Amino acid sequence: MKFLKLSLAASVALGALSTSSFAQPLEEAIKGVDVSGYLRYRYTDDRYNKNKFGISGRGSAAHQWRAVADFKTPSVNNVALNLGVWYQNANNVNHGKGNATVPFVGNNLGAGADTGFGVRSFYATITPDNTSTTVLIGKQPLDTPVTNAYDGDRGTGILVLNSDVPNLTLAAAAFDSWIVNEASNSNSNPSTNPENAGVQAVNLNSNNNSIAKNLYGVAGIYNLDTDYGNFGGQLWGFYIDDAVDALVFGELSWKNSLLRAKAQYTYASLDNDSDSIFATYYGQVNDRKNHADIKKSNDVLVLEVGANLAQDYQIPLDVRLGYITNFADGTAVALEDEGTNVSRAGKIWWGNTATGISTSALRGYGVQGIDTDQSINVFYAAANYGFIDNRLNLGLEFANGENKLSNSSGSAKIKFTEITPTIKWKHNKNLTVSSYYAYLKTDLDDPNTEDQKRGRFRVEAKYSF
Image (tube, rainbow, N blue to C red; front, side, top):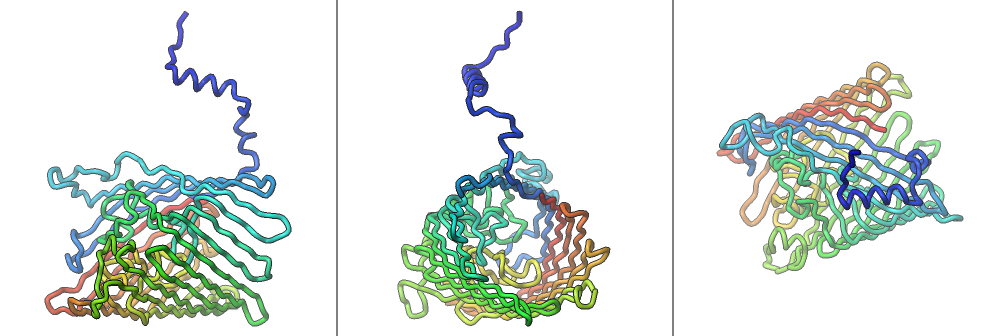
């Protein structure tokens, strides 16, 4: 008789599985659990023709994969549990250049080992009786106008939502640690991030580090349908220990079946005291009056109007026009360049060193309203036309603006123009394929500096479930 030899650990594990009183069929174990998420593949290719504005190299290209699955259990005694897992990996193909020793060999050049698995959320949802209140406790998405939960921004703490008053939702949150830009800074991504080629975020978030500084937030969101259209408004306020003394986002909006308009204003006062996180990573900066501590003001104003001709005129055309400016010292009004509620058009003119514009206080290249003053003026436009029952959409996005910079070293003005055609095909309710090519030209007012031309090509396939 042949015997199968098992290690002690394996024997114990098998014994536990076979005798556990909790063992049950998989179908029964997951009965009633809601599952949602998506599978996404991207190829991104960035090119630029000049080594200017602090950019090294001539471009990068990468394959990017992501899988997201969110599980929610049925509510039992007003409590449901939520678990979110994801896989994130990117391989930098580097245009076939490889490393200096062997041109076509290097780490993460398209077929590297996959390491980007993890739990991105784990929290409880509590819904008490007799009130329209929801309480979330645990590691959860950080879904605000100044963050981007889609790309992994999250915090560990508590969020309370209440909608007892008709048309009004109130929110309050407290997190003892948080992370942003994880999708751009995880170990599984290439060293040159294709999301913002040539830009390295400050190492606050490198290696999946979370920031252990308390973040507090409150919000009010109002929405009302009338005979004259839908009126909306929201107001958010944030405070972060040793980082942000005050951060406020406000929006007023109106729309009917044809027209729409909105105004957004974001203000932030950044703390650069000697014990702040900015002083730790950027260094202590003195202002023109030689004050030891600096609290710099930042703001961004966005005005936008738009029209959708589909309902009133049966023409599948959507257009919008907008203007962006600021009045304070800088534009660092967010924790994330990809804030979910910020209106703009174009793909690459913000969040890169070519234009010098970023709304993120966590960027590492100096334009964050602490040691550099800036004034921006940007006009943008976007149009989208649908074909084949709106399954095929062709679009064109345009941005033109200038960024005036000044600090103790002098002043500069950067003018830029971006033109980006887009295409999207909705194969069915689950699968969407899209692509764009963004062309950006920047002009620095320095006779010794040539204009820079930058291009990004991206193709994406996304399956949602």
